[in-house]
Length: 342
Length: 268
Ligand SMILES: Nc1ncnc2c1ncn2[C@@H]1O[C@H](COP(=O)(O)OP(=O)(O)O)[C@@H](O)[C@H]1O
Ligand SMILES: [Mg+2]
Image 1 (cartoon, protein in one colour):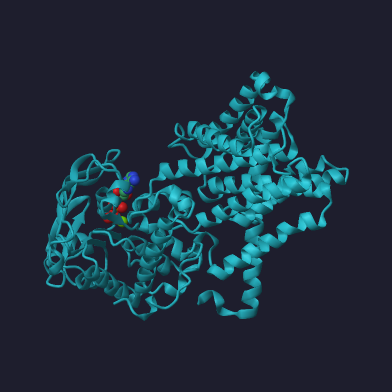
Image 2: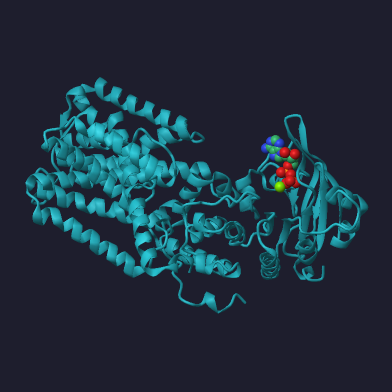
């Protein structure tokens, strides 16, 4: 009754969040590209840059999480670094009792979820500025708790975190840290990409773009916001766990408002709503300040970073990924002509 | 009317009783009691500002009701919010299309599958088998409705790249994809050319034939209403004016006065 076209092979089962995509071959291509890029630091970089690359992995987990909350669900959080802090300090406390990575990770997930529930449920119906302010307050609260519990957390002086040890691997070795962090980063990436293919992921997009349409088809808007907040908090917590293990020392400034703003900048500059954008953003916030420091101009980074954010916000609202896609489309348009219309 | 008579037992009737909607001191609907026959396509007509959209809003739960009630079948939906009414089978399209502008046509249609039983958030997030099954079911439903509306070739284009008429069809597709039992469409043919209007009418007739539903279409085009609808309700200035078959309603002097500003001889 619906015609022959229905039974024809379709490209319908693709990740809608990535727009025009393709099936299994495209996914395999992406996995292969990811693997090749992931192999570069251990093969070509010296210890120092492997160490920096391991940090990129940790921050990528954080930006992937923030992208789910902001890029896809459109909810503004200024506490994302605070949730990294929740993960990092939970790791510190749990490891100081001698527990290994598995228990650390479990504790980080549970504590991040509980903290996120505390923030998300009262803000159930908040959005935009009000949500941002509540998340801001949570960040301040966390900083206060850390200051007031010096015995437990090291207070303002910070704390040395034991490395993750798995068999003969030890995350105080840059190469081991990199390889250990690669696994959760890859899983976080896969799950974030898969989310775009699910109704859960589409609910988030609908909440971001048009709550009316979302409700009109039965989407639970508040529940979707909370789910996105919980997922993003767990991502941030795991990022904090990795960060603590890789860097080996944590202090409140690592997770303050500025850190949250930088994560936000990363997502926007990379390209909100895209997995690739979250990765580019993570690389940007870890590597670019480092390059300025190496060039002897560490003070330039905030200025250049601020200017770049302004340029991106005004001229390329879809970030680096959007810029790349636009160029790609233009190149193909110039070569192939009418592709867009078919 | 015979066209849809076979479905009367499946789709529920929609009834409003004494419906009054106020915006401040302004009364957008005044004591409107109407009955939309089960399993039929009804037309909702009236001049601009008559309260057609407000009536759809009241039925679908998108505006608060000062007085009166909304019933679908034997259920009183008055106390339910918009989302619960959608889950109960009442799905509407918006006069101003509300799409996920940066997403593909396919994504915009798939969001409409929310009413179908969806796996838990955890099962979806981790890609458990139930997620894959639901995904295949939803994709098949979307493919069917895209094909029906002639949007298959556009499935992977961003909706903000599409001409307005196609965007309107995407809005309609999002409503139809879950085969709701009560379908409310607010000027779905606006912006379509003559050919497009006829195609849309044919598609809606076909959808209605394949999936029994009680359908309400707000539409200005008299010929379109006559070809599509078996029943018509006319509103004017927030009040019920007349109902009946298209011939009865369009033949009514009062309707002609209110609707066309003059009696008889009005063109579409
Ligand atoms: N949210 C609102 N606030 C104030 N007035 C409104 C609102 N929605 C509709 N109205 C008014 O109610 C009347 C009916 O509007 P509407 O139902 O949109 O008419 P129609 O769809 O028949 O053109 C109009 O005069 C409109 O200005
Ligand atoms: Mg209207």
